[in-house]
Image (cartoon, rainbow over all chains, first blue to last red; front, top):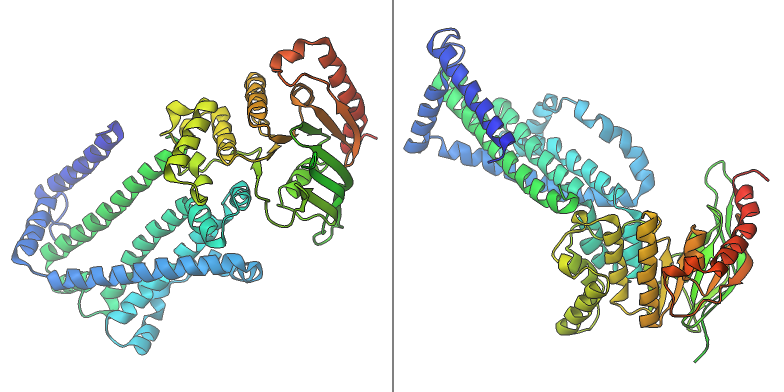
Length: 250
Length: 264
């Protein structure tokens, strides 16, 4: 483990220990926060008893669906918009202000359109994630060094060969950023939507536990969500670091 | 077989103006005959259209007027088979190893795997990169990355090699040594070489002939025959005639460079 990694782990462990002490000694009331060990114990119980498996599967399926749709359509839209500079100039201000719009105000519209099912949740998560992918695809295509496009021409590559073997790898760092943001936004969109417009899922279960004063379950599920999202992003971060090490030598 | 390997006849290149700016007449008219197997360098003030001239020969730009030909065939909007180009900027693919960079073009030919391997191995040995075949470009110095790009061009065995200031980003010592490698490459392959450079000493040292271009729109204002023996290297800079060649290039170029800077 690197020194920075050891520091990170130490900071996390220290934070957890501080919370444990603060909650055990009563410095923080149990009605506000329960000890991390109690969260873990409850989470272990939930996992061991197979409780909430359907909710976890429901949420993960919604996240994956929104993520896959956002990445695929965002990538294709990015390519299309990049090829049409006038459309790009018209859309740029919308992209720049897109995340200033509080999407969740549209939830009644989504329910009216899709009904009370998975679909409005997926739709909100998709809308939340797709523009990050479009913008990063555009950034990636903008940053392809012109000289590499010339190399492709000098080698007389076909359009598809140049796109697949030169442009796509050259744009990969930005595309990877788009993918990382898309998964983060897909999680945020899904779980936040489940709080307000779902009848199952992790967000719904957290809200249900909260409404029923079941703090142990609520915190256990929150810990699960944080750990899951953290693990996925850490995995992506490590993968990206390994890929970038080849390109930058650092 | 014609002794004229590549030809520019009355070539001009005018770039259409953008909003508020008129058309930019970048080049020409330019006439040039490159003899088969010669080493021709082009020097000229910044922005005089040197790179545009090279890109016309590479099929990367279409002349506004006039015609370009390679081996008696007109050059269109595609790089002709048998022409290789090395650019000033680092154009190695950062996601590929040195080996895969060099093999990039070969993998798109009908050559067998064994032949590709032989050519790549030979090119890496020739460019002094054989111990770095598994490295990625980011792990190499600027000079080594440029050698990767030259090797990638070399393996395709081009008959006309176009070099657009390939050593522009390198320090003086490395440039001299790279010049020696380039001369060795030229001698051993028998290819025709056209080198764009802003370094007069580099042009004087490497070339059979040097074309001096005017400020924009670039035209040839002098063609200097160096008269060097084919078997030469960077030690030619100590030859008294080297100073005379460089002085002639500079006397032609000084006024044009001042014009390009707006001082005339």
